[in-house]
Picture 1 (cartoon, rainbow, N blue to C red):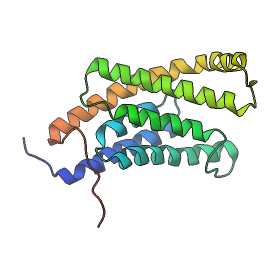
Picture 2: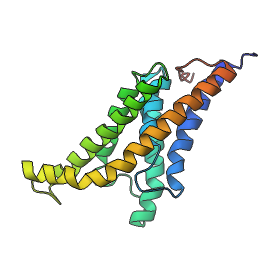
Picture 3: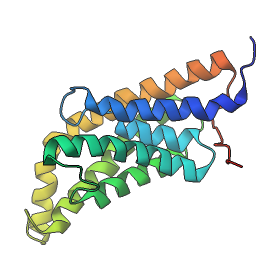
Picture 4: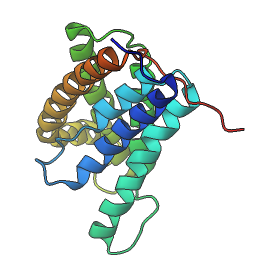
Length: 188
């Protein structure tokens, strides 16, 4: 098998991350999106830690700009509670940094972890805002209970997309003789 140029590897990983973020713009079931898998993939496949965080989070933010425009009617840089959403995805990137091999149980565990992290952090953010639920233990419990119906699609999306993205990458990497983690070249 002919080796392909290694400098293309970060470009391919970045293109995959951007495509995953933009896929949010295609109609899909509510909360069934590739964002958890995208964050895990970025954490696992960029050897440069700065790139592992900034590229997936930037891609998500760029797609959020478009979605926020359709929701708010104007470009909104950050919506209320965005700090919790982006914080949750930064934690998912961190979790992805521990994925070195695309083993089925490891990927299923990572997909479950991504869903749980997002569920716990984002719902905590809703509760902490104090706008909907009282800042009490029963209020926090009610907030998490109200989020459970959304968790099913989040979990399904994270599991399906995580397996698809990681095994798809393994096939691409094997065909093009690419390493499993990539470094983003520094500009000169």
